[in-house]
Image (cartoon, rainbow, N blue to C red; front, top):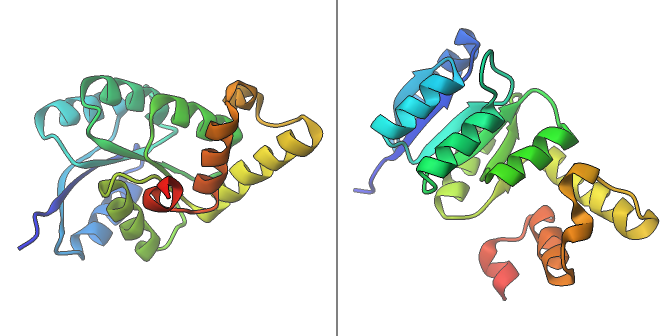
Length: 180
């Protein structure tokens, strides 16, 4: 039998947390190890229950999901982090990437997309919802064609090869496909 994927959730909205837990419990290969309401509690969970994947709301009271990501990745870089948001925000995406996120999903994504994201990051790949990929690619395209783009992403600092890899990621290629 395949080992279960250990998932933790942090969202300051109880109904949202409860709904995600119920969705995840439908999958026999996923075990929900914690459901908490703050970034501070998420850091404690990361240290004590060592989930494989953490689903973090970005906007929470107190510590944001992005700041929480930084703390968790500093202490336990092997934990995969998927940020959850109700919006596609250039700033959130850029800051999340700087902190080492493994994925970014919109809260209105389908159950199937949530499961796909969890399995993808567990394989060591990144998972971004189609809306996020479109924004990243559109921004990169604008940067390349008009010299504009997401200033916070500092895309101008990327070398040519890194830019090529970013384009491949944004277009949904797997790590193996990118390597080839």
